[in-house]
Length: 527
Image (tube, rainbow, N blue to C red; front, top):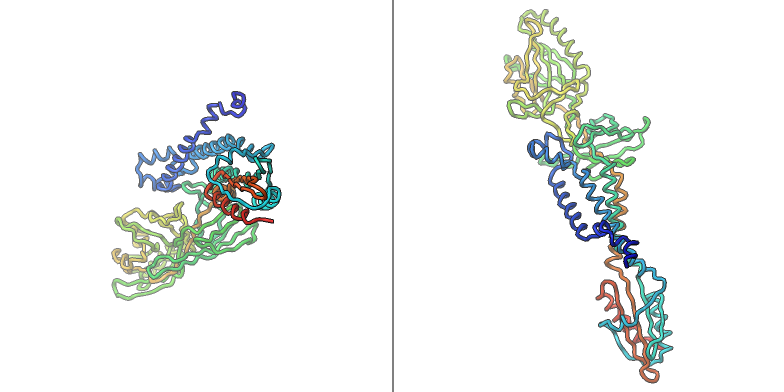
C-alpha cells in the first residue's frame, strides 16, 4: 500500500493539498467575490475619475491592489492558475480508478451483486432454457451491446452492459473548464481593450489603451467614411452607425457599417460602436444684430474666413468650434470661437489699413482651421469633455477662466477681442456690450465616431471550452454506465422462471423504467 501511495503521490502533502475539495471551494468563492468587486468598480477608467469617486485614500489602496484593472491583476491570474492546477490534480487522482473501470483487462460480472439488488422484475414463461437463451441474447445484444453468458443454478445467466465510456463525462467537463481558464489567461496576458475616436473622413492606424495614454497600432489603417445618427422624438439617439473602411498598403480591403450590435472584425481585432460626438461644424450661418441701429445681418462662414462687418464695425474671423465653455460655474455647451478687430477712431482710411494688417495676421493663424479637429477632447472612454475646447489650430482653449472675451489693444486705437458664441444661448454676447451682438443662426454638425477596440487571442479557446462543456454535461447528466443481468432458471418441463435486474452509476430511476420495459418485451418473446 505504501508503495502504491509513493507512485501516485497520494501520500504527498502537496498532492493532498491540491486534491482537497476545500481548496476548490475557497478558490471558487474568492473568484466569485472578486468578480463582484470588479463588476461594481468601473474598470480601466482615468485616475481623475477614481479620485473624484473614491477619494485619495481608497484610490491609493485600490491602485495598489490592481482593482482598477482587476481581471489582469497578478493575484487574480494566480487564482485562475490555482483553480486550473486543482482541477488537473483532482482529475489525475481519480482517473486511474476510472480508467480501470472503462478499460478492464477482462470484463467480469459479479452475479452476487445483482442478487442483492432490491428492484427486479420476475415472470414465468413456457419455453426451455436453450431456446430462451438464444432469443434473449440476440435481443439484448441489439439493446445493450456485447453480452456474456455464464452457467447458473438450474439454467444460465446473461450479463450485458453499455456506456462504460460515459464515466469520462466528468473529465470532459473538467477539460472544458481548463480551456475556458486558458482562454481567460491568454486574454489577460496578451489581449487589450482600447478606444479610438475617428472624425468623418479621417484615417487612423492606432488606438489608446483604456486607462492610459499608451497607443497600440492596428497593423493597418481604418477610415471613417461617414457617420449617421437617428433620434427618437424625445431627443434620445435611436441608432448610430459608422461606415468604416480598412486600408492596407493603400488599398481598401474591407468596407462595413458598424452599429452597436454588429462589430467589425479584422485580423484578430474587434471594433465595437461605443460612442459618438460632435467633432466640428460646417456651413455656419452667423447672425449679427447692431446694438445702435437694431439691424440684423447674416453671413455664411467657414473656419478661418474673415468678413468685413457692416456699419464700419471692423472685421471678424471665425476661428473654431468648441464643445463647451464653463462660464461662472455653468457649462454653456457647444459654441464657436472668433476674433473681432475694431477701432475707436473715426479715420476710416486708417481703420481699414490697420484692420487689413490685423486680419491678415488672423488669417495666417487660422489657415489651418478649415476643419476644426476636436477629437482631443474625447476622453479614453469616449465621453466628450466639457473642460476644454479645440481651437482652430487644434490646440485646446482654456475654458476654466471666468472671462472668455479677453480684449487687448493692438495699436492705440485698435482693439482685438476673442469672443465665444454659444449655440444654446443666442443672447449671451449681448453682455459684451459691443457694436454688434453675435449669435449662431444655423450650422451643420460634423461627427466623430467612438469605437471600442478589443483584442482577445483566447476567445477561440473559450468557445472550444463552451463546446466541451455542453458535450460533457450532456454525457454526465443524460447518459450512464448501465449493467443488466437476466437469469433463466428451469421451472419444470418446458417452463422457465426469468429474473431481471440491473444497475446504473447514475439515474437509478431511469434504469428501473428500462428494466420494466425490457421485462415486458422479453415476456412476450417466444419462438
